[in-house]
Each structure stands twice: as C-alpha cells, then as structure tokens.
Image (cartoon, rainbow, N blue to C red; front, side, top):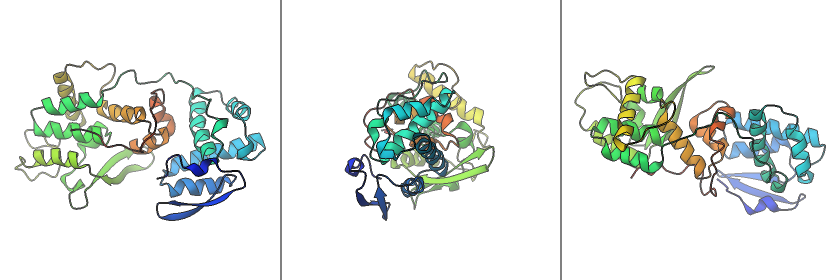
Length: 302
C-alpha cells in the first residue's frame, strides 16, 4: 500500500498514474467521488468504509460548493457543525482526513480533532503483559488461546468456534468466523503469523483425540466462550494485573489499542476487527497514535 506518497502535494491540475496492488490507477487531485471510491477499492479497503468515506466526501463537496483543492478549514468546521452527535462528527472527521489527504489538501483538516466520545477504554493490556501471560501460562492449550485471541483480536466466541481444519499450514493461513446480526456467519481467511503457528503446534502435538474443535476441555468437548474467558482471566491473574471493567474480550481490546497506539488508521482497525460500522471502532479513537509506519504490525509475541 502507498503510505503518505509525495504525489499528494502535487498541484490541482496535475495528472499522474499510481500503481496500487499491481493496478495502474489514474490519479487527479481534483477527481470525482467515484474516482475516490475506485482509489479506495484499489487499496483493498472494506466496502463499508469505501461507502462511508465516499458519502462524507460527496456531502462535503455539496456543502462547500467548490473543488476539494479549494476547501479551507472554515468549510470543514461549517460542515461538521451540521451534525449534533459526537459519534457522527468523529466518523466524518476520519472520512474528511482521508479524502482531503487523498485530494492533496490535508491542511484543511489537519487542525480539526475528532470529538472525544464518552465510551472509551480506560485500560488495556500492553504487549509486554501479553508476552508475560504466555510465558507464565503452564498449559499449551491456554498459551495458544492467548496467542490467537491477541494476534487476531478475536472475540471469545470466535475462538470457541475455531476448528483444526481452519489452520492451513501449507498456505500459512487461518480461517476466522464471526456472527453478524444482518449477515449471519461471516468467514474470512487471513495470513497465519509464524509465531502463532509455533505456539499452536506446541499445543496440537499433545492432542491425542480426533475432535474437530481447535480448543477442547479436559473431557474432550469444545470449549465454550465462558471457558475461553476463564482461561484468559487466569493468565491475567498470573501476571498480577487487575483489569478494570468488563474483561470478556480483553485481548481483543488490547490488540486494537496497541494498533491505534502504533498509528494505524481507525478505518484500518475497523476492517481488522471486522466491525460493520466505524462508530463501534471509535472507542479506540482517543488513543494518541505515533507516526504511521505500516498498516497492521505483527503481534510481537516473542
């Protein structure tokens, strides 16, 4: 992917071709919203993100009545004033940043901050805590649960329904499934981190049963979401930490918070967490990121 490319500061009338994912995409700083959508799609953005950001761009251009290159900070402030809810303002701020940076006019929005939402994470596990959890957990099964939950920011239910066949060593991939209210069970296949596979193999070498479930109880049954939570809770206690609030998806929040701290864009975190709406991801928006070096860094479990 292209990160902060130099062509984003070229003049409004300039034309250039950009190579993204082996496709040659014509790039204009004054291109239409449809061209902006094609640009995001060429980056592999989630369709919900593409739709939301394109809608924000369209509404901004209609409000300002001028091309993107001529939009100023006062136009952005006036546009955001149309929305009463903090969540709506925050969602549009992220869309505006992406669109105006793409259009070669990041100055119009660079001083605009997204509103702080009331629903925030006050506490999260840091990577060094997760490393200690793995090191101090005696059961290979529980170490594998911790590694998978953290690396892929999985909900406890998503860990519970994993099967052995979901792990493809030949292709170095793993199939993850989640239950969506409107779409039912949604599957996605992602790269398998080598350090996660190493921890998984240590666990599976000791398995003598033929049960398809990836994680089983002592009597051979598939582990329930509550059992997954209990295993993670025991690991947290071994590190000597008392988390605040709900800890049902503690490692999921830890991973997402770490990604945000590393500078990963909130839209990319939304896609990584498989959220349907970016509003849900906004609980991580208050975390101050450092400079963006890469989209999704590895979990650093070793």
